[in-house]
Image 1: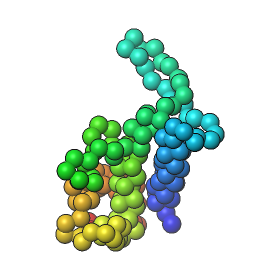
Image 2: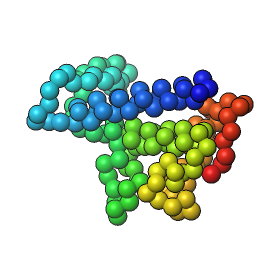
Image 3: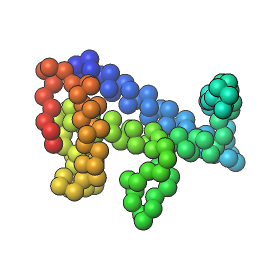
Image 4: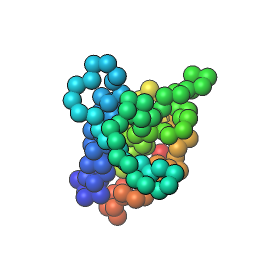
Length: 137
């Protein structure tokens, strides 16, 4: 496996582990362990670090608001769920797989990932090597 593909694989692993921690932090009642912390700037530009509240963790996971039952509509911050989906699709393309092979629930012609093809191709172009064969599927 070439080094760029390995870098992408390691990035996907790191983001997936972070998403697991975020999902655990969404619990309000039976939470065990330590809460994650996050840093933000207030309106004066002063940085604050505080314990992550469950609502903030849910916002960072993303994809919580779905009008008209569209599972791929994101309101506000799309979160790590959307990022991971695009990274998985790019990884699949770099390995020579089509969108329908990466996510087998949809046919290739009407696959929902076609909406994000330009974003996915940016990731592919960032991680592809000269010897990597990538077909635009």
